[in-house]
Image (cartoon, rainbow, N blue to C red):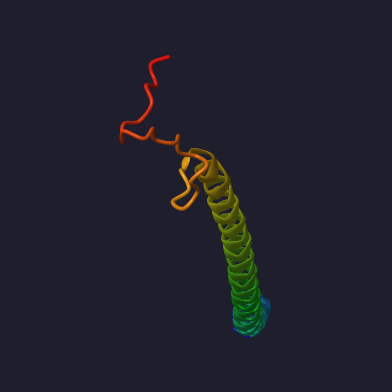
Length: 141
């Protein structure tokens, strides 16, 4: 019987031997999976934080750019309005001067032409003398 007991004990040891290393590999796999999960969670958190930070910076830069663009556009519009106003005033002045000069020239020309065609009211030499009978001389000649 002693021999049976030794065989039984040997069989038990042989049966238990593969289980012990299997439990070690399973524990190692469990630890590796936990470590991988922790690392993935940490990386995802850092990535999300980085993405949020980048989005905030992008929003700030975009806001600043929009503000600068608006300011530049406003300045350009003011400058354009001032330039247009000055040009309109200059055009108005030039037009007024031209109108005055034209009016003066037309008036002066009309007066000089009018003198040629007007008969003077008090100029007796312009009229032909009447004869003693009160009849004007015949102008049909």
